[in-house]
Image (tube, rainbow, N blue to C red; front, side, top):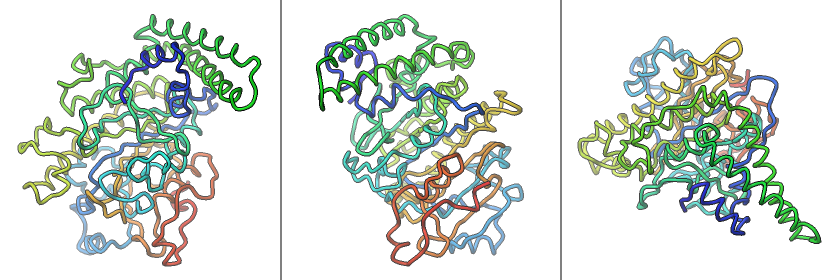
Length: 465
């Protein structure tokens, strides 16, 4: 399904209100608008496909003893300032003080394979995108609850599920606002730009939308009269959704000056879905939109699927063979598969560097916006094309006000199934505990850890400030 918001509103005006106000779409269009007195902390989750090969996350400056520990997957911890980064990561060399290379977190709770769908964000096995398999709100939605904003959680995606055509507009996403509910996302930069910044780029349509919402709100209120039971509850929920959207619009309108100040400049090549734009151009446009949306106060949490197995990488300058991400995953089908993996990650890291540098350039409080930001670059399927899901190397960038004690470190945790090992569920519990949700344990339990009688619940205490 691919729609734009205006089409949705027209459909709603014709009487199909239930489509617009399903809980998942309500989270996209109308999030809570209360705000903390302190500066909010911001999270950018960057999902990538094909896994992260563990050998490509080793440091070229390892001593022989450190290399041995790395190859044997033994736990150890190093100061990044004293080491050289892999070439694909070297664009972030000046930000090593903010960087963590994190090894050893397993993703067996969500599983490896071609895709994890919602699973890698919710720490459960989602199967092949089966709605009934969505067990809970994903971690990005949970973090958005801790730091409310007008748009709440925003999802963007350059994913093109294998075998499908190029996606544009507003499409089905991978995150989940609650059990058995699927989020929606922006599938191209121009759609994201037009929807997020409409309050200053298209004031006539905003005024039209407000009038439409007022009309619908009045009509639905009238329908409530004389109703009871389930029908009344259904219409009452729709009225509440309409009111929430009206409240959101009011909040966005109050941010007009901030939105104008941080409005990104989007190249016209992205018009109409941007079919002629190269992948690096699309990635750069999404990066600018993320910075603009966060700097404007429109959102504090973004999930960005930067690629998946169907994403077209033929426009990457290093891709002389015009191969696909899927072929690269199988390795043996092409020559230089490992080099192309590194090239893909290099382009990703250019966008991470832009995020860090631009957020560092925006003053906030006694420092910069990046001081209150965490960026998590993670594979959706573990350490390879079909896993294994026993580890999932990540790159994490944290600002000075982070409540995680891990910056400037190369950290390898105990391997899967051994004493002290930490799962994806432990990692997400750590994020929640650090930023105000005292949940005892988020996510599923790991069967191997259970069979081995290993403790596996709770946060990673060493990472908490």
